[in-house]
Image (cartoon, rainbow, N blue to C red; front, side):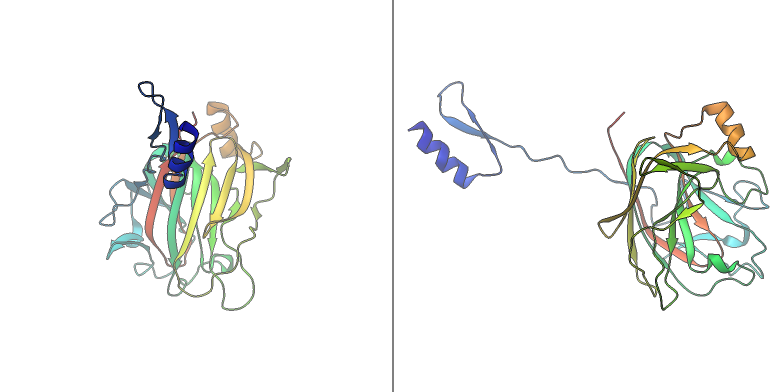
Length: 271
């Protein structure tokens, strides 16, 4: 009788766990559904609350030329207030640091590059993870010491992958070897035009980091660390240690307009 009842319950409720009742000896079900993931919206869709800009040649908090702004629920990086780029690389930092998480961003490139922007920065932006505290950046520093998840848009023809890896003031380990080159291409496809692209970054502190485009992992590495051959990074390493286990998150301004309509984070309970 018990085995027959077990088979019936298994057919009607395959997603539930069947356990014997202490009172009857029969079988009852216990819900085993995973708890819903709770993503945190870092960008509120209304304004830049929680975010602070740092642009080369300007003090922390100065939003030169209204580079970073919010319109119609979208965070826009644009250059209407510029006559020429003049090496004014910018980053906008979220107020908190993180260590173990998944980051999900929807972005797209629009319009034309501002005059004076370097050729390599055409349809080029990025999200910087494991960033140094922006309060420690110098006034004329171009990029925070960090790990960059580089965003690239296609040029209309040819291949130009996105979610690449760049390492300003840092190194990583890939395939068991210390990787010292500045940028490494991912295996993603090329995204021409102005369509929205969904990018995720899975970060496990000083462990594995994965870049994911439209649900597909396109590059993996581990053991992010400071490059002690870089004077600024060496000073940070002397104070906090060489290995990077966390840091701030920033979005990049490199002379081509780019928009972000979603910036979400899912904390991972791994500490």
